[in-house]
Image (cartoon, rainbow, N blue to C red; front, side, top):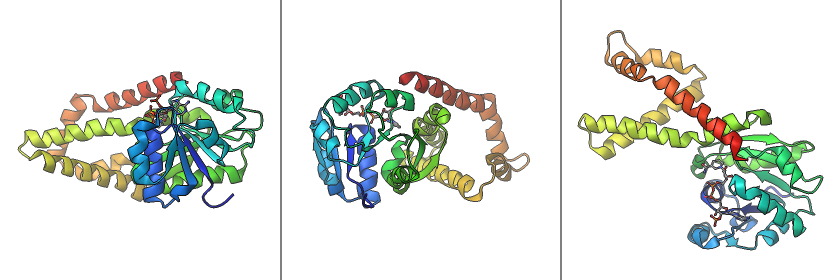
Amino acid sequence: MSQHPKLAILGFGTMGQAISAGLVEASGYPADRIQAADLHPAAGKARAGVLGIQLSNAVEATAQAAEVLLLCVKPKELKGLLAGLTAAGALEHRPLVVSIAAGTTLAFLTEHTPAGTPLIRAMPNTPCSIRRGMTVLAAGQGVSEAQLAQARTLFEPLGRVMDLDEKHMDAVTGLSASGPAFMFVILESLAEGGVQCGLPRAVAVELAAQMTLGAAAMVLETGRHPAALKDEVTTPAGCTIAGLMVLEDGRIRSVVARGIERATQVAAGLG
Ligand SMILES: NC(=O)c1ccc[n+]([C@@H]2O[C@H](COP(=O)([O-])OP(=O)(O)OC[C@H]3O[C@@H](n4cnc5c(N)ncnc54)[C@H](OP(=O)(O)O)[C@@H]3O)[C@@H](O)[C@H]2O)c1
């Protein structure tokens, strides 16, 4: 397999496009090594054109020509996709199959693919489109180190990659895959606070976003606990502790944590 295996992206919606954009625009994956297929390709034509990747509705033929298949359809669409691929013999060459579908287990994938198909679950997120993604991988039985490395090579240019046991995948989905949506709401709320206090909206959004980026980078780069970093900002009788008291009155910790818990529960039922 070359450094850039022939990649088929099956399902060219939000995630298919985000991953393609990250690969082509940010990591230099040759566009001619990627083919995308979607049942209704018209919606993705413009994006595929900008990226320079081929997009068609020839799902089975696209799969047949690829070394790695990235399944980017909704969980409820996966069974039909795999049935079509299997019936057409498009998995007979045993490509590496990587599914990003939430809540869809390796056992399910094994059941709906020919015996011996190497299977990996991946859980990326939309920031993969700008190389700030978080992807967690869980390999199925019989996947070789080389095949796992192949999947890592695909996602590493798009951000951080971590290998975890499959039992954690629903929690990963609730936290780092749904998480960008939660953070956008929190960012919006931070900016609203700035607007309420007189900042122009564009300024408030920029301050909120850059501050969030900086705070997250401090956690990742220093390896220190968020609580310790918070304490450093919080001077006695100062403005920060006054603001924190209001957030605690609103039960911010349990509200956010329970949001992740609920998303995890729903993710588990999606397959
Ligand atoms: N969105 C996220 O932030 C996120 C993050 C991590 C993981 N995921 C996972 O990523 C997967 C895709 O999510 P998404 O948000 O990208 O969904 P999406 O925007 O609905 O994209 C799915 C695409 O697949 C197409 N499709 C359906 N059946 C197909 C088939 N048999 N062959 C080829 N294409 C087919 C759909 O076409 P039609 O619409 O015309 O049916 C649609 O364009 C899901 O399984 C989700 O759990 C999503």
